[in-house]
Image (cartoon, rainbow, N blue to C red; front, side):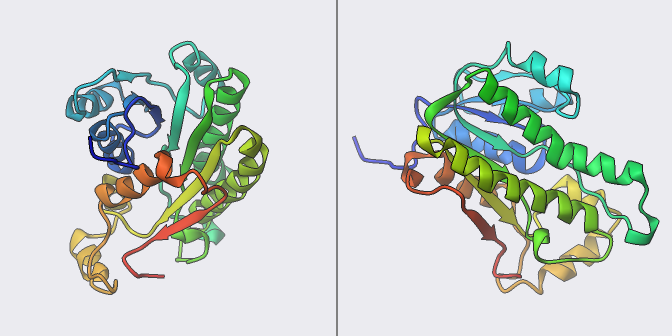
Length: 246
């Protein structure tokens, strides 16, 4: 049998935001690498679509709204011991700073920061994270690459990176790794919902040195490395994946 350091065979991985986009891409890739995948999201129908695209295995759906603390606590009954968690759930938002309302701030921070943090807290309290596990947060290059109208999204992703750095130190005694992935623009439904014409996006991607935006599969391949035993000496890192862009 050939050696494959990236294999996830025998591992159970929870992927949030698995109903579409990067989360779906990561869930599919994990199943192809032999993992049992727990799919989380709010839309049961879309999660079912993702489930249908997974390689055969012991996969399951646990639908829940991560911005609702009661839903997060309720999830714990359905989740087995985990060898990996990928926090993909989140929303995009573009609001000019001068137009911001309390609701604008709360909606993006609840989805992109508060939700993942509360879920991670419950997983730890309920002893769902195995020794030697890997935790991955999907952040964004927007934390250091500003754009107009993106202040609160950028802030939410910056907050999750700072949180992950502290979590990495706290979990290191149990050999649990915590890392972040910070993508540039990735072709998902999320960017198409922000009101920018697709033709304009296609022109913009030509500015990237590799002449294209990323795909969910591009991000999934990096997540596989972080989840696998190939990265056992990697924690507290935030890896940019951007096609050469800033």
